Length: 498
Image (cartoon, rainbow, N blue to C red; front, side):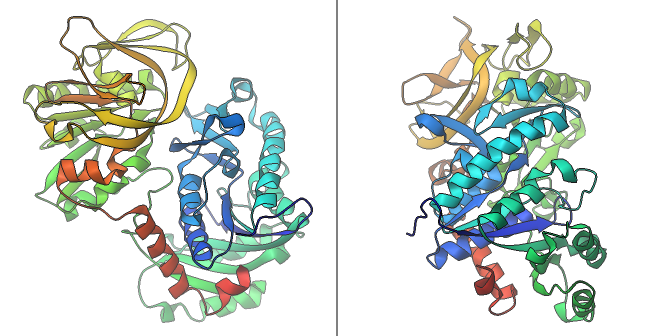
């Protein structure tokens, strides 16, 4: 593969969107795989991401850090090693007005406390450092924007869309795409308005519009694309069809109201969807299991008829545990477990299932000496720095019913947590999952299982054991996305862009 050295001009393809949810992440992932299939040395980049879906990747100095899940998957699509430079700033929401700042893979408590406009100046410096390192190492960068580049009230601080584009333009060649979700309606107005509000110095980089999530006969769009080009000078280079089964996790969640009805009568897995839910991307493989109904539960009634109840990760466990009780979900979860049905807690969900949570330093939320958990696992959790961020090779030992199929399985996984969990002595807790050093990272009592390992459902061995089925590999998902853009972009458009 070609590797750039200092002073060598690189190429960049920027993917902007008219709004959040327009399809930037999916399109950037598809373009990464399309380029990699043609032997181009490509890597993804997004200056700043806001998501509680994170992955563990190599960081500077040989350690480990966090980046947004979207850039992790884009790196795999590009067939390169994910790194913290690919998403140097990750904002993990902890409430409506607060976020934890992860800068170049590490939590920065001081920046987390700064006002938004002030901290943006500091974060832009780190983001540019990461961009320049990537530019020197790769032939092509596929850059994902955030939200919209036309937020004129934020333009002076917008290093994610506007300044990143200028870094790319000033250090090589820049081409940009603007994607709109046509299923929402108003796509032509969104494209025209966004184009008009782009800064004058960046508008010339806009090489094409992409209409995403189209349902129907694309010929019926005429003369819209032609009129839009007359108004803006920018051609519509692709109309991508609606694909609900593309296999890539949604960046901010996988809430799909129609999914359960489509598989009515099958195994029902209810995932408790508390307000600060995190790491939803790890449940994407469950959407591919034939006959499985995935339900996102925000009320006690949504747990009715569930075969499994899953308590996923949480960015603020204490607050989500309070919310869970307010909804009456704790009572239903206890009934479910008492009936011998499966309850699975992952990371923050594991902590909730224990007897007690202690946070004397206020790391998870408000300072407290002890908050009662759900009491389904005889473990206690204490919050303490530093945050644990690393990949693990998780190994199950002997489990009892109904989880016995997982016995003796090993699988790659990852940990992102601050809690330290210990079993209550002489309380019957069984440590059933361990890391490479033999430390316990999972416990079982009856039908309740709690694990600290994220990503287990991405293991084909685990999926065969639990559901007796194979699911599409990530490579197959990425190849399918590359085929999607190859078939629906105008002939020759991708070659010119790349």
